[in-house]
Structure formats: structure tokens, C-alpha cells
Length: 98
Image (cartoon, rainbow, N blue to C red; front, side, top):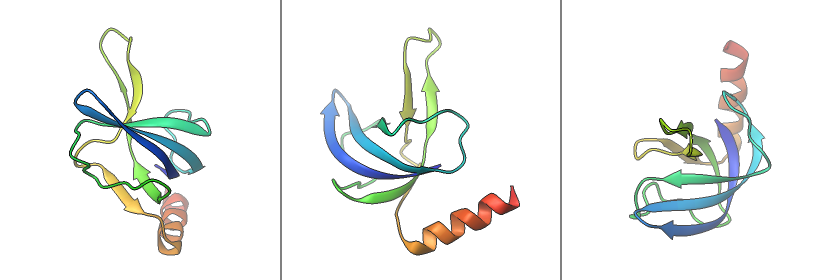
């Protein structure tokens, strides 16, 4: 789970790749750097992430069986919500209860 700002979007084959500035990582099960690529397994624009927009994103690390592919994946049913002060409060409260 992290707060990120969308820098760019590019269609790659049957997937969408977003370049994301990682602003604040929250629950880290894997390390994040300041800029990451976030992959969505479709080209329909779902979930709708706009360039320059800030979002709370719940993604997972995807590594294939051969360990040749290691990326951050936002699944079709993944969580992507526009960032608001309310989101910041909810994330802080959830972190205290973990």
C-alpha cells in the first residue's frame, strides 16, 4: 500500500504501464524506490488513473515461476482510490491497529 502520483501511462502489448512517483509507502511487504512502474493487466484504462493524479494504491509484487519477471501489479479488482486528506487519516489509523 502506498501513496503515489502518476507521471506517465504507456500501453505495452495487452497491458498498461504507469510510471509512478512513490510519495509515501505504508504497508511494505517488498521494497519500493522513489519511482516505480505499476502494471495493469488490461488496456481499457481500468482502474482510471490520470496523469498527475495522486492515489492510494494497493498493489502486489508479481514474480513469475522462472523469476525472470519481477514487477508491481495492480489487478483489475485492485484498490486505487484518489488521494484525499481522509485517505491519509484512514491509513494512519489502520497502521496503528496493525
